Image (cartoon, rainbow, N blue to C red; front, side, top):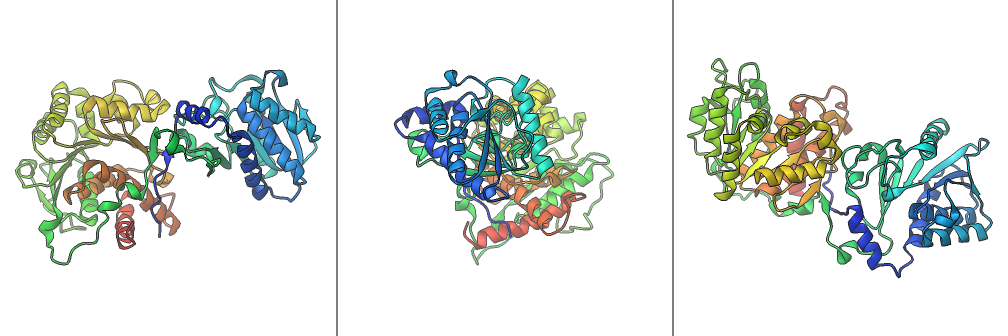
Amino acid sequence: MTTPIRSEPLYRAADLRRIEAAAAAQPLMQRAGEAAADLATSLSRFEGGAVLILAGPGNNGGDAFVAARHLRQRGFAVSVVFLGEISRLPEDAAAAYRDFDDDGGSALEAIPSGPRWSLIVDGLFGIGLQRPVSGPFAAMVTAANALALRHHCPLLALDCPSGLDADTGRRCGETIRASHTITFIAGKPGLFTGDGPEYCGSITHAALELHAERLAPPSARTIGSDLFAAWLRPRAKNTHKGSFGNAGVLGGASSMVGAVFLAGRAALKLGSGRVYLGLIDAQAPALDPLQPELMLRRPEALLTTALSALACGPGMGGSDEACELLLRACALELPLLLDADALNMLAREARLQEAVRARAHRGAVTLLTPHPTEAARLLAGDTAQVQADRAGAALELASRYRALAVLKGCGTIVAAPDGRWFVNTTGHPALATAGTGDVLSGMIVALLAQGWPGLEALLAAVHLHGAAAEERVASGCGPVGLTAGEIIDSARLCLNHWIAHGR
């Protein structure tokens, strides 16, 4: 059974530089290099095997020289390739090179062709990358990736895979595809979102004997159970269905009723006392035969029901009728989630934008849950811009619409209007299938209906959604062919497990 993890602080590069400056008197490079050597020793396929280390022209290269010295002392056959000028290394990195040289090591200008590598270490750029990797460095990255595949050996990145933007998770030219990354002092957002999870592999954190949060506030946090643990409460014995709220889902235009059913089933199985569905399609069925507990009605009737929370958008379409219904929904004084077609209408209709912003003045909670293309429409940009800085896009959405925002995708971002943001680390590529967003909407509205605050409901539902997918895949269902509906029962199982174990 998947167990929720604790949140961890994340720091952008500029904030880490301030921490490093505050701890300048401490031997951070020596600690980083030794920690890297410890992990490298455990990863190497052969005791005393051949290790290829790529050292760059900055402090990441200094970390690599320290690691190389320690690995040589442990009996490994170490080859260090250095592209740059020793005389131009930063002071600490130059000292690390001298120690390596004094210990009998030497720096090569090219990768030797003879050895069969038991491990490759990337110490080219780390978080210090300022421009796309190109020229001989790009050739070095390409060669390292190819050698790791050819020799079936681990590829360990120091701090951050070279070519990956540690702040955003965006690839900058050729990028190291690490099997393992050891990140120093604290985690970086780019390791966990965008391209980061694909290129970082397994991530190990080496604090270097520092407590980062005592030195500087984090830029963000990963999502963990501690952020919503206060709401993971067992149900009291003396309760009834009215104790757990009335969740509503509005949508289901012609040929898209299934989206509302998915959201409704998720809301029901995540604990809502009652779930009402407002279906726009005039020919919509009066009953969900697979979930007869759901109460189906016309949209106008749904909007006059005593709801605790409402989700709008699954299968909603973009008709004039749908737009008018959405305007009426925005006027309700309850937590309101906008997803899918509701977001597309919001992007194009100025009056809806004003209605959403006005909710914040009234103290009404609004939640937006776009995928990258929907986010691009909401920001009047393009998908590539959103993906280039996912955290920046989520924060802009939250600020512009005065709403809590979820930017879905690999490393989902949750952002609040006050500038706080979080990165989710659960999930699986199996979620890349139709309807999983509808299921997430149903999960969120279920928690809202049960009285969870908006931010905690988002954090918990996003974390749970990803954990449920992991659980299904681990049990042998998928990843190829996993359907959205199959996630719901797994989410219910995970949530009850979390509550039972007090997390």
